[in-house]
Length: 343
Image (cartoon, rainbow, N blue to C red; front, side):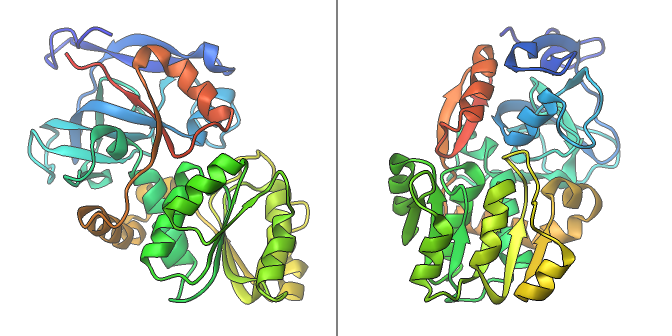
């Protein structure tokens, strides 16, 4: 991919990843578009890398609620270097490496204009591939565990899809925050072994065993105080049986594309549990005060090397369709990242 034409002056253009219709990875294309102009409170960032996540796949397929109509520049999780700022912007100076999650998208491009409040200095311990995929999973995991899940030290936790970006962050943070037994699920024996290396005490291969039976067996039929769920569908339904009385289930997504056939108001009455959910993008856009504590905790952990973002595979921009296919096939153990060509 060529460098930005004319740098960032008036009339300059850049390459940006867009699609003009919904469909499979084949609809993705790198278009020439104007370099964005940062508005008040915004930074202009030269993008070094961006992560591909499930939201990107669902947007491309036309299945993500609230997504704009195409064409538009896709991508949310990003890292890069500050090269400019809009009026009245209080943020890091030019030359600072930053990373973050941009709810409105636009990260899959050579340049990005985004609110300074949604970008954070990159800890020295992280390279570009790690930083690109760090903010979304780790801020979501921290908020699910601490803010919504109210984890107390010594409590057992069940983490689903633990080999993925969000799941791997949950395993590491639960370990760092003093959880008791960390029970996790994964789809292959190879993934299960990797999750154990990250700190899980017990990993269930859900293709071979009923995770619900395993959880109830190891907890003496009581279940766990906290379940971290991101799959939806049958996994969410079965997880309700795994929550101990008075426990909590936190849902942050539905990678299966399906909701619950079982969760009703009377279900909560019968089981005596709490079920909550949130999306990081909504909090970043509308309730940044809820994200601030998570940012502080996660940055501190990265600085102290108490957690390390897991990168499954790095793709060049020319293979972005393959990156989407790789994630959709559930082959990733950690984050799928596209590293931009450097001029």
